[in-house]
Amino acid sequence: MAEPNTAEQIRQDFAPPQVPVEDAAREMEAFARGHHSEGRRVVLITSGGTKVPLESRTVRFLDNFSSGHRGAVSAEYFLQAGYAVIFLHRHRSMFPYSRRYAATNWLDVLQLHLPTDGSPRVEAEQSQLPGIVQILQDYKSMKQSGRLLPIEFSTLSDYLHLLLAAAQALSPLGSSAMFYLAAAVSDFYIPASEIPEHKIQSSSGPLQITMKMVPKMLSPLVKDWAPKAFVISFKLETDTEILIEKARKALATYRHQVVVANILDTRRAYVVVVTSTEETKLSVSQEEDHSGVEIEEKIIKDLTLRHTQFIEGTEVN
Ligand code: PAZ
Image 1 (cartoon, helix red, strand yellow):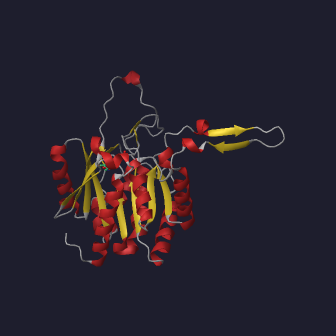
Image 2 (cartoon, protein in one colour; image 1 turned 90 degrees about the horizontal axis):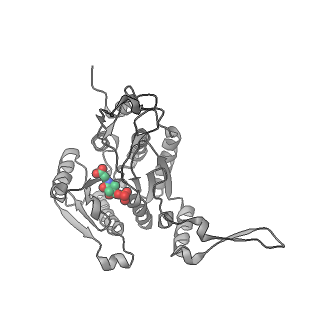
Image 3 (cartoon, protein in one colour; image 1 turned 30 degrees about the vertical axis):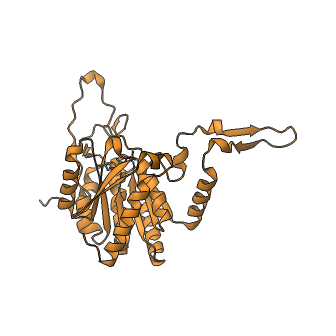
């Protein structure tokens, strides 16, 4: 029997998604078509980590470190650069604009006024929300422009189904579509046919599980699903010795345009943009960091330029 292709494998081998994929597919398709018809480029940003259930009535799951910071900050800079953004992100991970107040306890920021002669009023303590006026302005104008489409996932299965739907929505845009795959997606999963239904019992002794390799989405994405798009993947390592070699290997295997390589501990201050012919090091110095410069601003400046060259067919890489 022939091996199922990746799309079939996702449908057959993974638990049904817990999010309304068909509705999201329709929204993404209409969003992409609308912005494309207005001459705008569209980027799909994936952001955050994936949850891999160990039981189908899930009590326990495998997760990872990703906070969604990279994706949320990048979305803001892509919007600033004029792109329309599909923000495919992990539920409750960082979100563009509001991410600056992710650690804020709103109950401390809000003041309650109880006038004797009127209704209660709630006001925010502005001094506890640094930069709020500018951020609120940017957020409101972005909302009004309709250039941000947030789509949420939680589980690995949700993510895979939604990525497939996003690729189908963006494919008709050809080279003006960009995929910016910053999510930290699990490499391992338990197939739907093998996952225990109920909570794994500790009385059965130490836990031994065998997980299958998650199909590599980059391969069908680049070859079949959106073959004309500009595709950027991210490579995270903890060992600097192997980072660039692994990024190069990914480029050679999947034949997409760019890998952004980063190391777990330094990812906020240093990345290498790797193409088939170049390695461009981008960094944020301590002084820049103190004055609020974010590495994503440099990444997006670099990538939007490469995207222009790609569209114009004048890229040298
Ligand atoms: O989400 P975050 O800001 O905490 O981290 C960003 C990141 C390290 C997940 C991203 O830059 C990245 O490298 N994503 C791909 C990870 C991978 O190799 O699968």
